[in-house]
Amino acid sequence: MSHTFTNLFSNQSTLLKQAQYRGRFAPSPSGPLHFGSLLTALGSYLQAKANHGLWFVRIEDIDKPREQFGAVDQILDALSAFGMSWDIDPNTSEDLAPADRGCLVQTRRLRRYQEILDTLHAHNLTYACHCSRKKIRQMGANYTGYCRNKNLPLTDAAIRICNDHVNATKTNSDFDHEDYIIKRRDGLFAYQLVVVIDDIDQGITEVVRGADILPLTTRQTSLYKLFGITPPNYMHLPLVSTKPGFKLSKQNHARAIDINNPKPELIQALTLLGLPVQQDLMLKSVADIITWAVAHWDIANLPDTTEIIISEQKTSFSSL
Image (tube, rainbow, N blue to C red; front, top):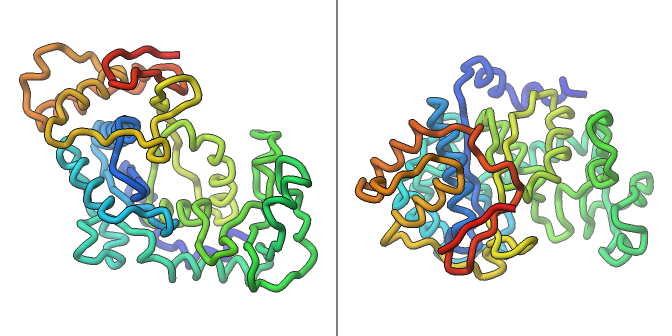
């Protein structure tokens, strides 16, 4: 089936031949960056630049109802204040508008997502699902494919993918084998589909992100297999939490990082990422700190944990 998508992803073969490291940071504009977001952004940036690669910022605004007015500029201003300059991807530059500040914005790519979805439809790889969340809960923890062979109308329905491309040797999880939603009942494209399309179109070679996204990785690699494309490497950084199981998040009203005084939080984040920070680093400019960090970045020094506990005031740190 992978030959079906050859023309749709023809640019990918060219990018693979270039063999240049390509990384990305993909925040959702549901609020300003907090300290946990900073750790993830820094990790992805340093990994890209230490490998002499490109680093893109992608605005994942596909879930438009969650977007907070002004959050995109707040995020980009924060990245700049903390010394992280992003590259512009020439392969997706036609999707950029002047207001995008050189960042790929998902809601400008709806036609691209629909193009892929139409191809999946045409090859009977998707189906309509009319099940409510309540009905799915009654079935058990995961969706069981109840609507798969019912040929239900696509109107007022979620669209699920026939998830038959999971590497069975790597997972026994029912969640991984679930026919998951790729377009929601409300008409919005689902994260699982668009993130893979975006990563393919930008030729991403390694995804560095938080450990909370780790459970979704198998679903994403199954899509790569369906499309006949080699998936990128995945690296999952520890989450920053105020207590076990309570990660910093916009939903939990984690406070924004201080763009007017970035050095203290920048150095704290570098310390948590395992860099050999010395006191005199505070005397350097933000740009010099970032240059130093790129030169001293070593993934072997990352903490061997999925969660780092910090105090509410970010004054004391410990690892689980």
